[in-house]
Length: 132
Length: 384
Image 1 (cartoon, each protein chain N blue to C red):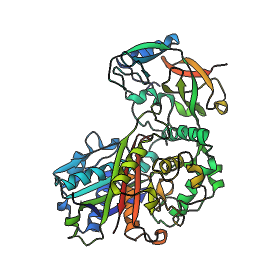
Image 2 (image 1 turned 135 degrees about the vertical axis):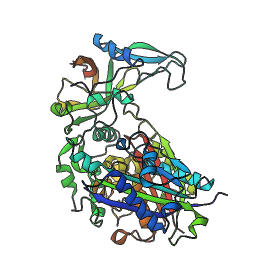
Image 3 (image 1 turned 90 degrees about the vertical axis):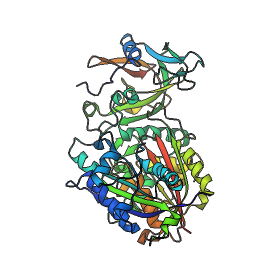
C-alpha cells in the first residue's frame, strides 16, 4: 500500500531523497536569508531564489495530538498514533509523527530529533525524543 | 454612494441522511425554495455564485448551469472551503452594485453523509498527495486532528480546558432541540461530551460536527429592485475576506488568524463593533473553532475564549445567542456549511426563528471558515 505516500516532483526531490541518509534538508533564501518550509523554488517572503542547506534535524514539539479514530488504511491499523507540529531549531515548522515513545507522553515543549523511517520503500521524516 | 444590497430569499433543502438524493437535486431544491421565498422566478437569475466539492469535478459552475438550465451573465466559483459562501456574498455585493448582474443566486448541495455511509468511514483524504499537503497527509493527518493540534496549542498557551470546549457543544445542542431538521436534538451535558469517545486528543466525538446531506441557497439583489419583492429586505452591512494557509505547519498562530482580517474589514464597512451584534453565526466544525472565532472577531480578548463560553452564553437564551439552529455540531454539515450561517441569520432578522428567536434581533454576524483554518469570510447583516 503506497498510495498514501508523497508524490515526489522536481521541487521536492532533494528533501525526500536526503532522508535516506538521515539528513533533513531545508530551503534558505539566497537574498533575504530566511529559511522556510515546505521547500519552494522561490522564497515565500521575497520571491528570490532559494538554495538547499542541511538543517540540524532537531526541534521542539509546538502542537500535538493523538489520532485514535480513522477509517483509512494504513493509518487505521496504526492507531493510536501521534501527530505533532515540530518547530525546527532553524525556525520553520513541519508536521510529523513523534515515534518511539508512548503517545500519552508526547507533550508540547518536548525536544525531538529526526529519525527518518523506511515505509514501503520511502523514507519518511519522523521524529523521536531527543533524549532517547 | 453605491446602492445597498439585500438578501430577499433564503432557504435550505431537505436535510439529514438522504441516500436517494443527489448533490445536484439538493442544490436545485434549495435554489427553488429560496427563489419562492423571494417571490422571484428562475429566469430572473442573472448571476450565479456557486461551487461544490470534488464530486462536481473541475468546473462546478458549468455543471450547475447545465443541470439548472440557467444562463447567467455573471458567474463566481470561488472555492476556499466551507466559508466560500461568505466570500461569495461579498463578491455578489460588488457585482450587484456595479450592475454586472441584478439578481444573484448562491446555491449549494452535497451528499456527504451518504458518501460517508458508502465508504469506510471518516478519514478520507482531504487533499491528494502532490499538493503542498504531500508534506502532511502522509503522516495520517485527519481533518479533526488539524483542529486538535490547534486546540492543544490553545490549551498550552491559555489554559483552555476540555470543559470549556464541551460548553460549546452543550450550547449548540440546547439550540438544536428546537430545530426539527437538526440531526441531533437530545440535550447533552458537559459530562456527556467528556465521556464520549476520544477521536483525536483533546477532541471527543461530541467536539466534532455532524456529517449530513443537504443544500442551501440565498437570493440577493439591489435595494431598488427589492422594492418589487414582497419580502422584508435583509441588508448586507459589511463584508470581509482573508486567506491563511493550507498546511498546518504554515498555520499562523493565535492573534494572526484569517478571521481577524475578515472581521476587522466587515466591522469597519458596517460601522459597527462586536457589542452591536445581536446574534452570531459561526462555523463550528469543531468546538475549538468557535472559541478561536470569538477571539479573532473581537467578542472576547485573545486567550479568554474558553472562560467566555463556559457560562453557556452561546445558547439561544444566553447573552450572545450563537448558531441558533444548532450549528454544525448538532444540526447539519454537508461539508461547506457557510451558507447555512446566513440562512439562519436571515431567519433571525426576519423574526421567524420561533422558540429560538432572539428578541428584537437587528444585526447578525456570520463568519465562515474554510479548510483547516485556511480562509475566513465575514458577513454582517441587518434590518432597519
